[in-house]
Length: 81
Image 1: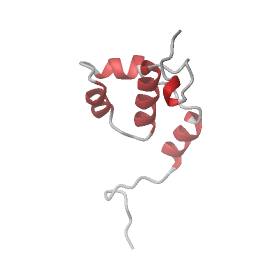
Image 2 (image 1 turned 180 degrees about the vertical axis):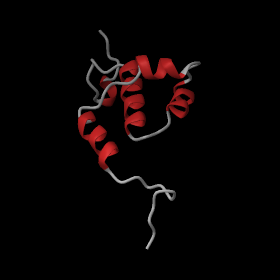
Image 3 (image 1 turned 45 degrees about the vertical axis):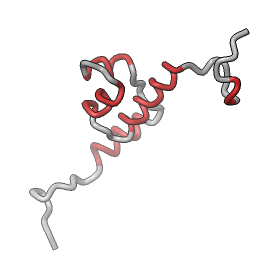
Image 4 (image 1 turned 30 degrees about the vertical axis):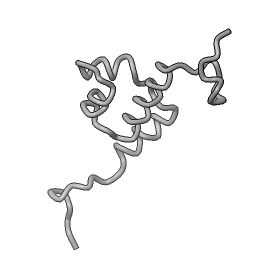
């Protein structure tokens, strides 16, 4: 009988790799630079982190819209007081 995760009350379908996928996706979604996530996960290439260990967040349309419509916080474009 497979008891992985059951002693912690976790579902049997939860795997270590599943946690890694979620962790990477969460970090990237929160704006952590991919090269930092790459090191945290121990990947040699950032492309591995992006291509295999991240998933598009459900609210990605909203995030794209916000990134493109929010005013830039850039001192070069700031008109000042």
